[in-house]
Amino acid sequence: MIKPELTDVGWLGPRDEMDRASHRFGKCSACHEIICVEKAVTDTQNTQPETNELLNNAFRAHVKVKHVPNAPRADAA
Image 1 (tube, rainbow, N blue to C red):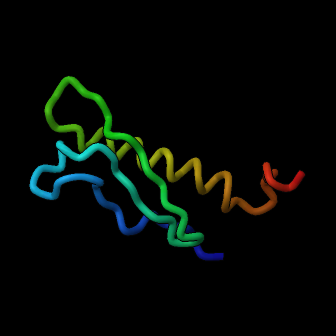
Image 2: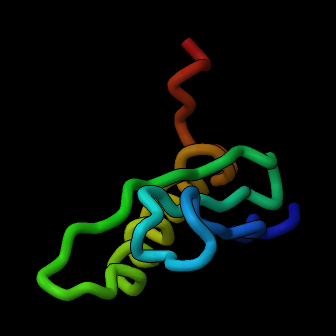
Image 3: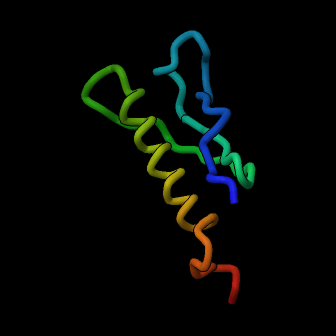
């Protein structure tokens, strides 16, 4: 089994200034599902580190739910 990776990461919004974008997204390399998070709210103008962390956390949760062998599946009922 290939280890899933987050690929094709980008911002939804203007390319000229990423902090005007509203969402960060990426694609799972194993199942091609798109993971998308809303831009983080911070006290600073640069939201990129916090938003990247949100996306990485969402991707890790996706991997645990969808790609861990022998894990209980919600759709198996």
